[in-house]
Length: 458
Ligand code: TYD
Ligand code: MG
Image (cartoon, rainbow, N blue to C red):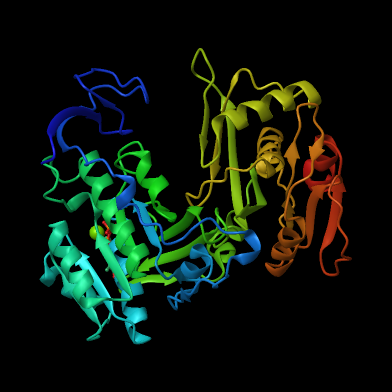
């Protein structure tokens, strides 16, 4: 008989202690420990361990290529690295209301069209609520089984009975196993259920997608171990006030990470955005003002054109403000320091606001030059050339440093009708471009003089 013991577990990171602690020594959060009763797993003896596969020579290993199911949603397939790998466990995490249930019900519908069997475990909503959503998404299929259940043992039984091609668990925080006495959503429950799901996926060769909620701080609720356990972690991001949503793979054992898929939420579900740059630049041409530039950022392997805006004004505060939306504030501070030291732009009495239009996050240094030029054009009250896109990282001595995927970025700018692109001279480009002038610059000042037309800067 297994021994029942009690322990205290940090609900943020999964750190365990025997007694209550106010502050977690692991992640530093306060008041996150709760008591959990746990069944100590019985020790595995060597005789119980399966020994079907002895150590093998590398040359003896048979390769069986992984089988992928296409979801028929190309943006989702791209993030997954080409489709759902059979027998894999995928975690989709995101804020409440972002559209996790919607995208997975749509995916289920698409797989059913290909005659695949899908079991959708709805632990948060009743069958009626799921049906209502399915009607809205125009999903009708007898291959789709909806199972409103929170008990893991029952869910497991039906997975084994039904043997579906895909199981969706909506959500991992809402299901519980009766092996453990702590409540659903606690770290022990999440870990145990996820572990068992992993075993089902691997032993039965069934693909399983679990939905996970995100905490206020933006972390995936439950311990980091959840992320370590699964094969693929996909983050669903977006501004609740905007209609588009971004799927981003942050871990993928079967594909590229940092790959993104972009969707727009509509009245009947999530639609793929095939050309996202167009979406982000929708309002650009009409609103060109001082302090606005276009950069070509790279999301995963895909280039994306976005507008950066800067606003600089005399500060009413004793300490000037630096507020950055969509870019890292530390990065903006560094750019301001370089601008002051290298081109003598002193903004110590000015507030500086930097914003990425559309609510998307740009977290790569390649955006530096675009940010710097947005600030400079705002200070000098000049308009940056409307048809010029910018790309380049700024070094501390004011030099422009090389960026990756340069050719893809140039092609994307050209595709969207830009006539010029400013790139780092340090980047080697092989192709000759027709239709777009490629301006290669070494230093910030050069980029300013080449980008701002003389007539406008006068
Ligand atoms: P949902 O998938 O329930 O979010 P999650 O599972 O991540 O909590 O989607 C919630 C929002 O999406 C809700 O505010 C309604 C909206 N929505 C649409 O705009 N169109 C649709 O077709 C559907 C199904 C939902
Ligand atoms: Mg939901």
